[in-house]
Length: 272
Ligand code: KIV
View (tube, rainbow, N blue to C red):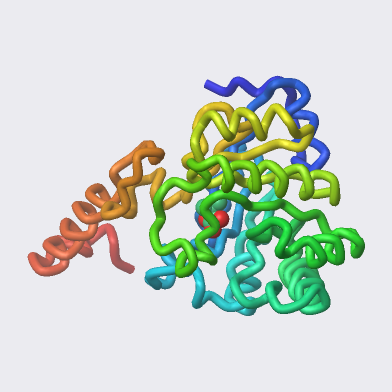
């Protein structure tokens, strides 16, 4: 059952701020290819994130660090071709924006121009302030990402909950306010205590989107392969699986194998 308060034919960055104002929660989900994005968009997910988690789920890397800008553009343009309603946000990958603001702007422009995406997402706070400013000044909508930022995994050392201590929580709050002031249209909060998500969400007019950030975020995001149970080794507490596709797909594929071996497939009706 949908509890949308208003119909949006096309979701824009402005729609998201309106949703927050109207108390309507925002749904966000990843997609990396045309076929999946078609399904996700038809199910009326508000925001599709072409996440650099493609590095893990699509390419099998251990971290998000190896994926390149060209690869992100390939995934994003496949998604864009499928989408009619959702706002499509694309991650700037590791190494495409950290060295200087000019490079950050060049990378964001490539994503917008070559894929047709609607916005970009960057990880970090004060450290990337100048890059965020520069991208926004070019008219490109920016979403922030604070808390557990997987591109910094080797600095953190583990994927555990962030900002449990006051010092880190205070910095996160400052960064969140700064990103809002610069003009970001939304903010992903990953793996932080629910109480902190509440404080941040109540302090901002732009929406917060949680992943492992608890129920007080203005919206939620998950990796679509996790939600569908296509991945089965990743079991964080925040993840709700709506299907067990790993098992379902495995069964279907082994049925196909045995039908081929037994010469049951193809039958007379399945040939020309
Ligand atoms: O890359 C990604 O999928 C993300 C989400 C975890 C928010 O950044």
